[in-house]
Image (cartoon, rainbow, N blue to C red; front, side):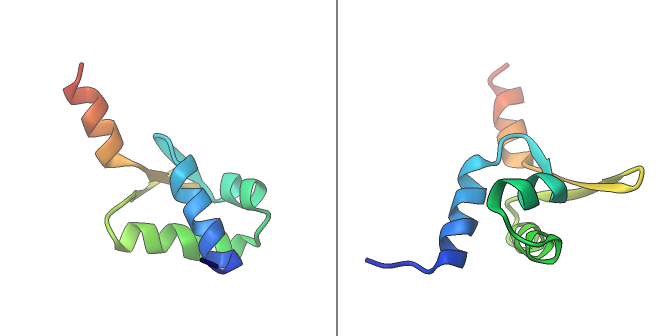
Amino acid sequence: MYIGVNAQKRLKLICQLHYHTKIEFVVDELSVTRITATKYLEQLVEHGFLKKQRIGRANYYINEPLCALLVSRG
């Protein structure tokens, strides 16, 4: 089964998300443009995988379900 390069990059991004990330990390890790990285992260926000949080001048994308799971396990 073949999946396109963009789908592979999105899957890699989802698999590598830990607690949080920001656009610059995605640009470096996936070798995509800032615009593409933003698009990928915003799609994950739209589907409820991440929450966008502005801190200072940077946007962070937080994996709230994972954080909640870790907190609940104490």
